[in-house]
Length: 344
Ligand code: AQP
Image 1 (cartoon, protein in one colour):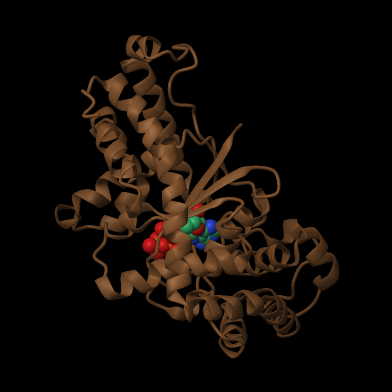
Image 2 (cartoon, helix red, strand yellow):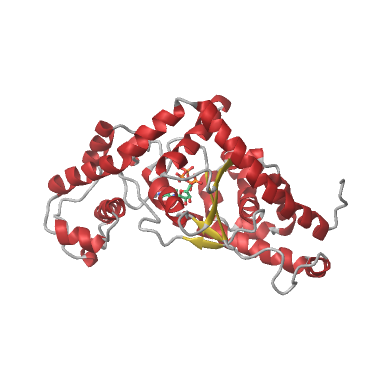
């Protein structure tokens, strides 16, 4: 049965892009699949995190998962560093992946910036850990925002090279060598808003690390803050077009219409059928009301959960144990296939 796996980094400022591009889809996938959702704290430390803040942020992402509607009993919600097999498999993958493959990763180039000599080795190797996160469960369905597509392609390359490099050993371990030991994971990016853009610049992705808090709507923002951020969102001075084609070349307008459609669970066409010809002074209050209506219950539930950290920790401990049971079996086979001796 195909498994769903995805993760979110506890790097603070969880925002509407994370919700619409990832978490909302995690919730939807639960109806028809077995899902494993992870708070990827080992990814977070590829850029230095204040340790006390990190602990809070891990609980906050967990609270967001639960508040958005992920069921930690029917599915698995856990914390990456509590399942050591992720890091263990990542090391094997570091030895399978090629430097040239990682050198092409655009996210590393963006995050390392000009001072590449000073970036952590972990930031460079991030995609091999991400491949391990998915493949240690032999998961194939990975709901992610569009920015993660390139990393998913790398995960497929790693899986394929592992299968080829160890073909005979895969067969000796009792697996079909034509199928390979690892399946090839698929990115699922076809959600309603796979790329939510900054409210300050419709050509830039909405991002946790943008220094301007007005660039994003955070899941922890209260109603007044949401309304103010929508009011201040950058736009042009034209009214909204009646057709989607009229949004081309109008990145800021397109972004607000896309956000509205995703929050309302409808299409941009339907939004423009309603608001075509309207000024932003009329559209923005409607968007703010909708954003508040969708996010306020999640926000309220997140706050309640954050008041009980022991409960969140218990959810993660239970999830980590169940995730670890799956990962340990896969890792036992990997060790065998690679040629490591078993200690037990
Ligand atoms: N703007 C976005 N639109 C749609 N999806 C998005 N995601 C992130 N930004 C957007 C998706 O959210 C999931 C979790 O992301 P992450 O926490 O692993 O890290 P990220 O992609 O690095 O997120 P940020 O917010 O952009 O952080 P920084 O500022 O550190 O780069 C992923 O599925 C991601 O695609």
